[in-house]
Image 1 (cartoon, rainbow, N blue to C red):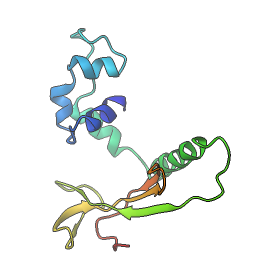
Image 2 (cartoon, one colour; image 1 turned 90 degrees about the vertical axis):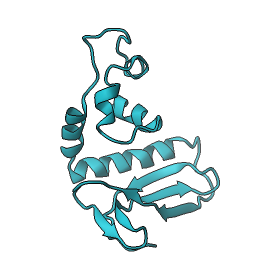
Image 3 (cartoon, rainbow, N blue to C red; image 1 turned 30 degrees about the vertical axis):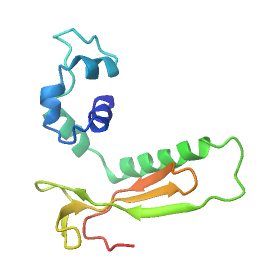
Length: 137
């Protein structure tokens, strides 16, 4: 999964990018692999697709909960108050991903994840994946 996170952070959004980047020395180094070892490749796009497709609703809930716990752990003591900034954003989809629907406001098929930030620091509290047809706030 480390490979996927670093690819997303580097601007490689599509799963097919994994096929061309699986031997990239920097991505291999970030995944704690020998960067110049040609026999030790990272996961291909098909492997990553199977992994991402195997997640259950309970797995996604646990991930969202882990983000909240990580946010809470960032405080040494409880603050007097917290202001939350709740917003959605469109995440365009291509193909036939489950729960990807046409959203007329954005003019394309998408997911509409709900993002929750702490307003003063801008820290991510959690994110909730929602279908593209979910109404706006």
